[in-house]
Length: 460
Image (tube, rainbow, N blue to C red; front, side):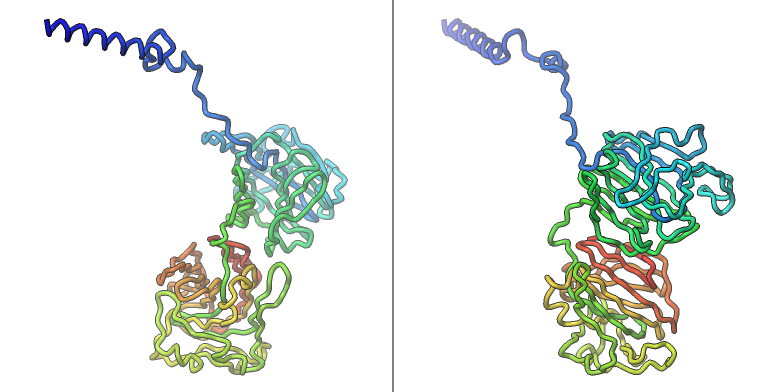
């Protein structure tokens, strides 16, 4: 009797469970593997959000005779890197699909006769010694030529091309995000004065400069690469293989470079002159010293540090090592100079002499240009120029002629006694030669120059 009761209970429970399962699934049967698509339709990913810079691309000039070659646009949306456009000007009808406009503010008459596919050879050729066809823009007096092509729906892509500035007063223009001739962006290589690179934004026919104007010395009769990686919200822009802009990228407040300036050394003696710090946006001079007055070098204004992983035997009496003296070279035009000169048996690696006022007000000491003249007197390496210096554990320094006068790099310390070296380049500095240095801080990025030529960039 007990067994019958148990059997009836189990059977009833199984029937109830089945009814509940059928009810929860709308009748029929439980979904099996592979049935979901048949019941609900194909499972698809939502379409990606549109990018902020959709549009075609283009090339142009401003007061320059320019060659263009090897234009290529690669789609980066799917990860397959499919080619959207390619033109090496070797095939038939290479200018098919071109639109002709005038860059806002320019005066080009949109003459197709200014353009021609020509054959060049030898050192002129982009690919080397072999004969090569390129697109030439001839008129070096025309301003604002704009030749654009492609699809105004292009969004996530890489644009790469080769450029040769043959002659002229300025340079080339690379267009991107082109919707029409009233709405687009332009990378202006040379600008209207031939001395800068910057980005312009044209909206409803109104043009504005939309980036920092990076000082740049143009090279003529030399091929260089230009590439743009267009992402959803920002664009990485390279000129001559150097990342100049991360256009549109959000910058965190903690990444903005701010803080003091100063000068250091590693196993080297050298001289300084004509220190000047200027705000980039207002032109305000934050500090200037040509050491005509030796009294401007004192402990009220300067403080000694051992920055990072170095040592300094007598930093408390730093004025014995750093002194204002008259330049013995009467023809140099430097007059009084600041000289780092110490006895050969002393140890001075990583020494840093910092301007106090620049460390005490970091909110003011940002977005500036530091300029200084440097001369190597003797030693194994080169110069150390400090900036964005908050304390001996938080700073950036440009180490020029490091590793036995073979490389230069930015050495970065953020809450770290051992600064990390950022990209190295081959570099060397000669004894007895004056060099002019410029270090430009723009938000989280630094541009570093020697004698007016861009040497390195780095961004935090």
